[in-house]
Image 1 (cartoon, helix red, strand yellow):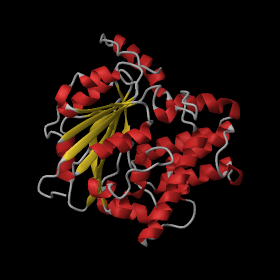
Image 2: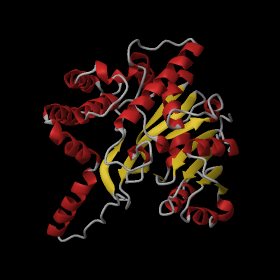
Image 3: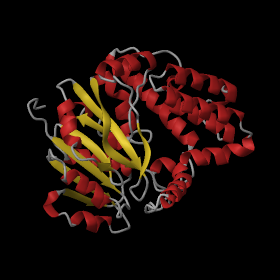
Length: 361
């Protein structure tokens, strides 16, 4: 890799995101440090996404193809790229101004991945006041390494919040992962080099009804993640981690690595309350999962406010009758539907304009 001035490729994958893909492309084109390659893959969309992409002419490298699925599309996009650093941007997400410059400023020859915060927005682009991942400070390569050696995992954002070294990706791509490439890549990154963290938002993650993380095995949109599938996928990613660690002669903590990730202990707790099946559920109880989660909350390097919020949620989930668990969990994953009308009501009381309604379909 050219150490003096690494080149950056942004690969945008699109399927039926006609309403969003132009904003994603524009967010890359407007960067203060231009991308060497902007590869936009339309994976057999049935809307007008392909026409939107073609309208950019030679400003992007268009790949218009029959539907192959997200995993194959990512592999195809990567094969078309040649830059030193690669960022996979979902077509419904955005980069903020200065994102590529910040990534390059944080990059060193030892970096295999740079990760950054993502603001969460709704379908209309309204900020929801949340972000991935609320990184603690400091959270440099040393802190990531220490967390990984202690727990087998670390804090990392979803797809659009990561940029990878080509030297790292060449060892792993193409691949057929349990669910998507980013889960495996993020899981394995500390085995192969340093992870740099930029603890401020450089992008926006759009939360809406079409997100793949809210779909079941048949692609049907759900009010919450399909907990059983997500837990099984994560367990498979940890199996891949153990295989790579063994091949590299690296050691990992003993025991079930799922017990080290608050998100997935939370998923298991919610699945038990909903009587949703998942691998290993016969060995677990609601009370035991609650105790594991509370231990993780106490140990995490987070603010007192964040810890209190997690404790309150977990305890409410533990205590609520099963009949109330589903509406409570649905509310957790669809807060904007409740908060947007409240924000509008307060705005009208102050004489200001109402915010656009969130798009959830």
